[in-house]
Image (cartoon, rainbow, N blue to C red; front, side, top):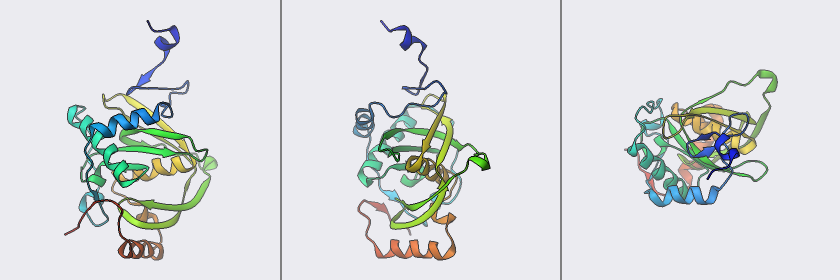
Amino acid sequence: MASQQDVDQQVSGGLPVDDEGFVIDTEDCEARELAYRERGTSRPITVVGNPVLHHECQDVTAFDEELARLVDDMFASQRTAEGVGLAANQIGVDRKIFVYDCPDDDGIRHVGYVINPALDELDPQERVLDEANEGCLSVPTAYIPLARPDYAVVRGQDLHGNPIVVRGSGYFARCLQHETDHVYGRLYIDRLSKRDRKDALRQMAEGTPRYPVVAND
């Protein structure tokens, strides 16, 4: 029998939410991530130049078994590539969804996913920029400093279509912004100066990916 606390606790996509309505994605991370990826099949990563990465993805409208399998495959692919976040178009799927397995600046692990994500606009007075090296599985072996807000709130849906809200700070905030950019057809190198973008593409050309990628025609 559930306790009254359990009965009162809101649940979103199998995860509890806190008193402010934010998903609690820091509990049972190892078991949840393992369950996703063991059900999934790893797929190769699309890289810059592939058309699916460079346009806004389609909204998810069908919350069905196919979508659940996609989430599983995304977690499996993310683990193979040793990434901390992965959007669906990074495995060639034109849908607005990303998964994450990312620590914050305090070393606390966050595991989850967001369907049809949208970033909250921050009050300019609350925006604190953090400039740090950023990389991307779709721009393999390249790392360039990029300033982003050190706090982010993403709203979206779970696998049942229910609304969810995820927040992050520090490195995890960077991840949430980076992955949301992906589903709108933006890579982090699109936010760089022409000089830095050229440098990133040079690093990519000179490097060798440590994971399977989809070759561009």
